Image (tube, rainbow, N blue to C red; front, side, top):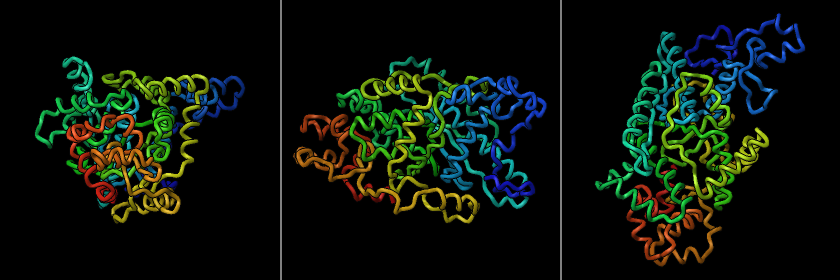
Length: 446
């Protein structure tokens, strides 16, 4: 964190990106006024603008200032929410798309600067946080040739290896390995599980839930303390509307915060304030930010309809996605939407002060000790109709009665006689949650 002192040489003082690379304004160009200023970057007043932010003509930036502006949003989210601290090991979820490519680059640059501060400091008292990269191979659920997949994975390995030191470990893990602990054929079991879900939207949502479970497994087995997702403003805006349509209004605020600690390994969203349009523009301007187009097919069902709807809104008004996210952000968050309080003496006092000031207080948040065993959404059991609870209790009270309404209607089988078979196809993590109920969920949260 920057301390605004020109004499500070502390290894814990991470100077802001803009402070280090901001060019000095050209006073001669500024005094010309009029048309000259209109043809210059609105920030540095030196270079010609090459792109616009979501503000249109009023936010025309040169390449460097555009990147600095995006990095500033990222760094502010990381700093104010204590997402990454020196003792952490951070696992970046990488899909190959623009959002995950940018978040990987920004995390790398933050680590690189921390390493430079560490090398320049004599006492070496402040560690540098570690970074790993995880790619979930979902080719078993798509019709892709093996050559296409191998080429994409090779490109991803090249992207990670080309990043400057410190080195970063890459995990390429197939989605079906979520079943590996059961000692069975993961591909076949995954196919049977997806075939058992008749709803198209339910299949897409179930794959999302399996993906986050697998990221949790990778992080836990390899000692990582944070999972960084590249979810941007555009994706969160779509989730706000789709979750509302699916009847997930109660749990919506849990999914859209900067920090989500309901999982064993907290999940953070440092690109929450960055629209997809700006991330795509940065990747097109910066030739070093190579992306890998692999599994970016269009969504269907509710998710596809909402995505198309938000796209139309964005074309009418470029700031519409930001408005949706800001409006949803007024919802009261849950008590787990903050990083656990830091007591480590190795963490800079400035970081601890920022966390104490900006993270949620227990009396200003919702509390929930019950979570859906399928999607891990917080539950408000008083909202469940008694007919649904009795329907589930006839066959499998642990799974049906403990699931959220969205999973009940879109993922779980409609025929109660099929519930036991469906339960046997789920990953062990979901089965354990269903059998232990609230006690298991509360233990995981704690």
